[in-house]
Image (cartoon, rainbow, N blue to C red; front, side, top):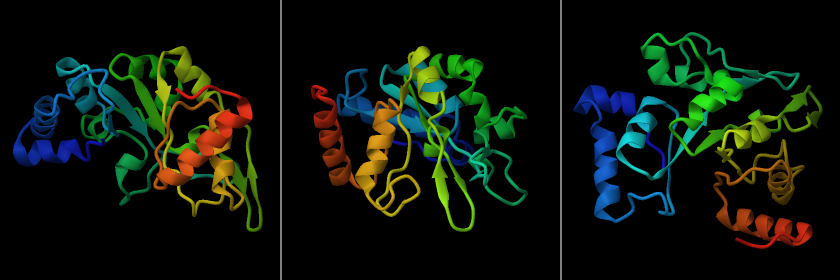
Length: 212
C-alpha cells in the first residue's frame, strides 16, 4: 500500500492528515500490527518516520532515479520543469535537504533507512542495470544494493515488473523475475501477479528452495 504525495495532502488538509487516516483505517480493520500482511510504502521520508512512531506495521522506503545513462549508471539529477521526486524525496527538497535517492544506496543511507523502516523499494536498475546503444542492451552484473540492505536488516522490494519491459527479460518475463530472485530480493512490485507467482514457483523448484 503506497502513500501518494503526502506533502500535498498536508498542505490541503493539514499536517499528518493522510497518515492519521491511514492508521485509523488499519486499526478499524485490525491490521495495525507488524504481523499484518501489509507493507506501507512511500517515496517521502517524514510520513514513514511519523507512522513508525504510531504503528508497528511494516514500512518500505521507495527510491527512484530520473534516468538510466547509456553506461548503465543512474541519474538522479532532475532537469528543471520535471517532477523532483524522480531524484529525491519531495519532503527533503522542500525542506532544503540536498540528499538525493543516491544517498539511500550508501552505508550511511541504509543505516538511516533502517532507523524507521523494515525495507527499501528501489527502482529495478538500482539492483541490475543495463548499458544501451541504438541496437543493443547489455545487462550489468548485480550491484551490492541487496547485500548492503540485508546487512542493515532491510528487506528489498524492487519495482515494477511488467511483461512489456523486455530490457531484463529478453521477451520472456520469467527470465526477469529469476534474475532478481537470484540477486536476493525479498519481494517485488508487479503488474502481473500470475506471471510473478509462476516465476517464483519455477525458481523455487529450480533451486530446491522450500516454499514459505
